Image (cartoon, rainbow, N blue to C red; front, side):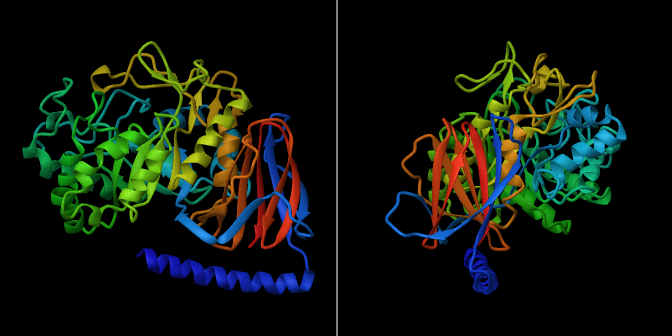
Length: 492
């Protein structure tokens, strides 16, 4: 699979390059588009184009080599939750259209291509009480299975189908909890599925996929448990998850004619993944049926753990599938120096998230998904179910803030930094080589899109500075604004 994809990529690149070469022979010039978001007020602002010129002397510059490729990119995005749809539904139709366009339209907005949609209740399933799709005890054949809540106006199916009108994206789905009756109990340490219910659990996942498809929503990737093997959600170990995937889930999906890809993970942090995943992945036959590995970012900065994970399982793509700010008396998901007031309105906060995306990408991440896409001015609304790990007070930070009282929509700094990736780096791109340079304030990463376009994203964490890019024995020079992100695009 890897060799075939690489060969197709090389052939596509050669074809694209031949077209570009013909164009260059005609014009003799290579234009570079430049977009900037900055603390000075730029927001995805188009700057004057630059042109590569031949290098006339030895110079210190960032070097780009699109012949040296690394991981394939599967996309960027955020998460569908009932809380977000509640906020969007508080707006007028015109405002709703603008929000969806800004998130999913690749020409006019962020162009998100990779999304998360939780299976049944999570802490931001806010349209009602905690729920599962089958609360009838011992209904092992799933005769009473229902997604009725998800079909309601604030439900996940309704949310996803609205978003589909504005863009094209894939969806991964993990689960906090199975139906309560499948567990020994909901006491800490006892939140394990009883083995007698493993076949029923497999039917539960299969029913979910089938009923969503019947409602017009395809789930592309299935992930069994969210942040498992911890105290707050299901306590399943990764060894048990590996056995469930191999012996129950995959056979059930195949018997039901489903081709949904299986993911492994949703660890709460990057280091947790390399520590815990092997107990399940190293079981015979498990890696053969797993598509990719998924981790969360709540360690904030242990990026090298991702490269270690890639080195151990080099054929399995790695996705970063959840991270956010959350702060309350019982929750403290805040990095050192981060804001404890939710949500965060200041543009400057985006710099933290932009650097996280760059560092994840440089450590082999193929997909990047933030947690809540839309919340209100309180950082909510959130669901309360303490026995399911959903606390009484749980304000968090989203990509977009909608004030449900004033109807004001705020696109956060996170939105703009994330959009510099989701809009310009398209699904099927590959990360390519770029040197780091000698300015420690700059953090950068480069990609090559399927159409041959090269994308270079540069975060300037300091004061304004001149920036030189060398590619194919040519060079451009651009002054980077202080505390900014700049995207350079040109035909490779």
